[in-house]
Amino acid sequence: MKKISLPMTVLVVCVMGVVFSATSSRADLYWESIVETTGMSGKPDSSHGTKNYMTSYASRSDNVNRIVIMNFEEKTMIQMNPSQKTYHQTHLGEAPKPPMLIKDEKAAAKEKMMKQMLGNIKVTPTEETRKIGEYSCKKYLVSGMMMNSEYWLSKEVTGYDEMQQIIEKLKVIFDRNPMMKQMNAAGMLSQLDGFPVQIVMNLMKGKSVTTLKKIEQKTLDKSLFSIPEGYTKVDPPKPPMMMRPGGKGTGPGSGPGPAKP
Image 1 (cartoon, rainbow, N blue to C red):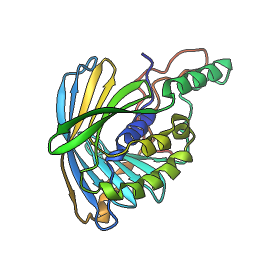
Image 2 (image 1 turned 90 degrees about the horizontal axis):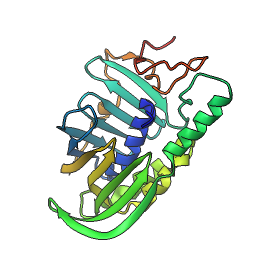
Image 3 (image 1 turned 30 degrees about the vertical axis):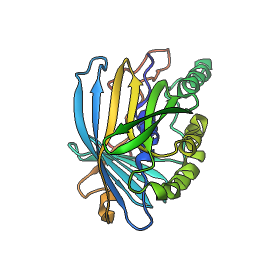
Image 4 (image 1 turned 135 degrees about the horizontal axis):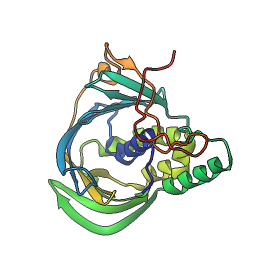
């Protein structure tokens, strides 16, 4: 299977999970979920928790070794590495650079291949329902980015009634990003009718299951959506699918380095 660059993958995952981001005009939203991963090639099965924060102007997701902040007003995404105290920033109104260095006819072929891999996100509602925790959920099938997912949505979750407010902001942002527009990310947000209580993602011969465990409305401090003091800005990780002149790959060892002045 061809590899996809880390910045693209993170951005897509944010889209796939952003419907968790229901928020209220009266209060901010905080929720916790459990992510269980099984059968991933070369990786042991694992289970870990995530913490998520949402306001009308920004969102934040705390994972095992990464914090992702999306600012809806500035249309930016910040990815932080807490252990290394580094961060890099992406403007959501721009498309990631093509994952290649060569400037010959191979470039066009690789760009075409990437568009085919990204594809167009397709949402298919089903009539299947089930109870997950305390919520009655309906199953939606979501395909795209070489992944097939199940979204179990409920309208009984706290904050669902106000969810459309934040979705409208996200749709505007995604429609201005060429890659997200290609994927029909805004269309996906419009078609998922409910708050995802559980997302089952099938990828790389394995499976990742994210399940909502706790959700509440409360006031969140603005500092949660800012870069803490002591963090160093670095360049985004280089895509693994890169070619030097002459056709030789750079390999997956290219990581982030200090940001250029």
